[in-house]
Image (cartoon, rainbow, N blue to C red):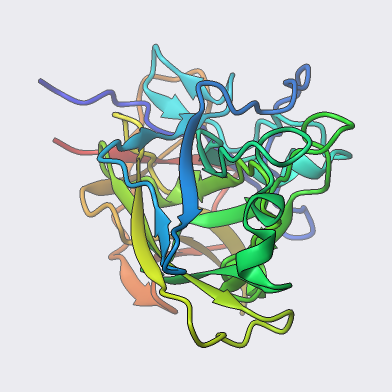
Length: 301
């Protein structure tokens, strides 16, 4: 079966001198905050021998693409759509596939809400904490701390953790039910049903994160899966040294740069300039003497 020919939104390129490059941006109503339902809460426990354990799961959680971004007719994603209100903390999930299903949890009954690890095991912990370190997994996976409190969800700002945006890979769990947000930028979804993982090491440490003797640690692996339809990388356009350079990430190899003089035409022709490698990107260099044109990336069977 032949793949859809219109794979990516057209980019309007002004090649004449003095005119800026422009990309159209779609607008629409903002989506409500991303929720955690359906939940999958994995219990953290400390047994009588001071051994930490965490409930494991074989589930692979499907990442959700923000509503309105995917065009089911053309099988394309529009990265220009701003799904979540940019003024809200959860706007960090714009342009991603995300999930809040998995959660750290304690089902003890001594806390006010029945889920406070530090109340349940206060005597054993003696003022120490559970620290969680991301020790491996997919580098594309970003994580934002979203802990629930009495004010409701999302409660607190989406704080980068586990190495996201330069944060520490080490995170001190607050002992509550935390359905953090896990997200992968859409441009990284280049194959159907991509698997993303995170390996977590749990241990008991003091307030500074130093391991405390006398407690056993544990490790667990969580898994997520991308959507069934991959994302074609968006091309970038820059003007340099009197030329126009169009580039895209080389993660999808069967792409052809095509051009037309109108967005409404059905006659898109392949750009014959030979692609090259430039700063880790696949790039095509064009002469600025050309007239106005429209460009897009097209998948070839």
